[in-house]
Amino acid sequence: MSLKYDYIIAGSGLSGLSLLYRLLFDKDLQEKKILVVDSAIKTQNDRTWCFWEKENGPFESLVCHQWKTLQFFSPQVSKEFEMKDYRYKMIQSGDFYSFVLDFASRFKNVTFLNEQIEEIFEEGDKASVKTGAGTYTADFVFNSTGLFHPQLTEQNTLLQHFLGWYIETEESKFDPLVGTLMDFTLAQTHGTTFMYVLPTSERKALVEFTLFTERLLPEKEYEEALSLYIQEKLGISKYTISHTEFGVIPMSLAKFSPHIGKNKRIINIGTAGGYTKPSTGYTFQFVQKHIGQIVYQLKHHESPVVSPSFREQMFQWYDRTLLDVLLTKSLSGEQIFSSLFKQVEPERILAFLANESGFWEEFKIRNSVPQFPFVFSGIKQLIGLGKK
Ligand SMILES: Cc1cc2nc3c(=O)[nH]c(=O)nc-3n(C[C@H](O)[C@H](O)[C@H](O)COP(=O)(O)OP(=O)(O)OC[C@H]3O[C@@H](n4cnc5c(N)ncnc54)[C@H](O)[C@@H]3O)c2cc1C
Image 1 (cartoon, rainbow, N blue to C red):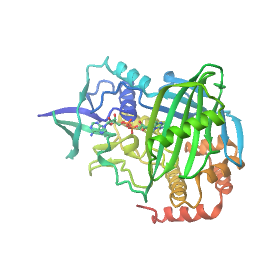
Image 2: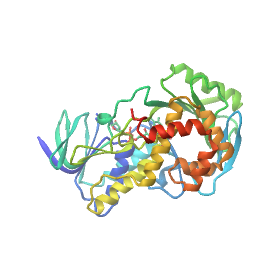
Image 3: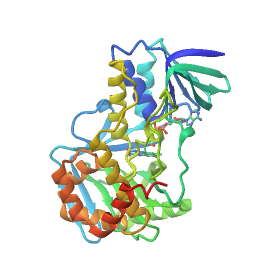
Image 4: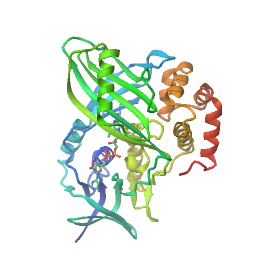
């Protein structure tokens, strides 16, 4: 059985549902026949998305908290900064899934299929998705499953892994106006290691123990690190844990293909399309930019393959360079981020990490970090020696 659609969205997580929402929101595209396939039913609040942006984003109504003031701590630097343009925002994935699924339920041209995808393949100017329930064909398949992931090895990939606890205290312990972006005043025994502290009220905060290393830790180590930090650094002895999240995000030099097949009928989106920033693991804001561009191109009857601009290619090179420095252990994350936060205005660092800085800012950023490891890794990545 082969059923025909305009678009198939393979994987209905962040990128798949962002695409669905923006297609349905567009009056020129909202009548397209769309099939959405996922093996999971997206009802759980399985992750918290934090990101920074200047303007309101497409999911602004879902932002549950935002911070104008952030802190950075390391043994050498202690900084609190108020941002002029950017806001650091938080969205709960559970709110996002139910918002998009509720919106989509009004459209009869959208079908949901709860099945494991076995294969996605191109056939002439069409692409098909094979599941146990049948094979489905469309003009384009937008894939965010891991079916086309490159091989991730300890040589080409660092894992960003973290355990987060939402804690609640009896007394007021937090300032909900101030978030801690990175606190490096922790033992760096395993590699780059820091805490986030994101208070959403005077009595509630997400505290997240985060590492960039080759391997995961035993579960107990994350829990011990969190307990110790909450007790000793935050000075809190009485609290309850209302929610936990554990995550692993690949930070990789391996090439995530933007599309599959010679007719470019399978378009990779989200992490699968390379939209997880290799040097930081942040994905949310890059997915939104990519999806916005896909929808724009479809609306203008163009191919949905998005070609990176010269500036975006430059940012990819910066990213690969930074990740190569971390992977080769020429410098630690703590050393790199401390140098940056010591010498550069923090909001400019955020602009740089959002791929939104200008040449002059990039020049200052390049000059604020130890030159040799970056020049070495930069040349390696430029001439392709770093391709793994
Ligand atoms: C706990 C956690 C916290 C995170 N926090 C942040 C953050 O604060 N900020 C940020 O920018 N990024 C964050 N990330 C990284 C990134 O934003 C998320 O991983 C994001 O969900 C990636 O979007 P995606 O669409 O690529 O993949 P996903 O959202 O994971 O969606 C992929 C979908 O494909 C489905 N699927 C996979 N294989 C198959 C198959 N064979 N058949 C059918 N369905 C399949 C899955 O069920 C899933 O629903 C976090 C990640 C995690 C895990």
